[in-house]
Amino acid sequence: MPAELRVLLAEDGADAERLDGLTRFLRRELLQVDVADVTALRAGELPPGARAFDGAVVGGLVVTLGHSVEALRAVVSAIRCWLARGEGVRRSVRLEIGGDVLELSEATAADQERLVGFFLSRHATG
Image (cartoon, rainbow, N blue to C red; front, side, top):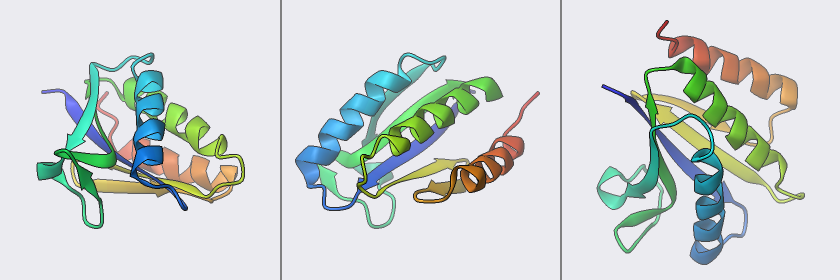
């Protein structure tokens, strides 16, 4: 069965409309990497503290990865690039796969690299 990665975006001061736009933009970017699908995170899958709108979690995505750790690596790389384009606005991303959570925000690039490496190593399947 393909792995599913839950992604929850946040940006300081962003309203639901802004988060929706950011989420749609990131979804388009993620569909360009080697993933099976990227869909809206449904309210039934609501993480603690998340807001829902029309049945979908505002700022939430579900990425169907397939069986390759390289797909996960590509998704995390795209998300890190999205974070870096925050233009001085504090952004954060919560990634969850199989109950394992990685939260990225204002950590240095070196710290992010180390955290991402640990996260990827826990989900390497071959």
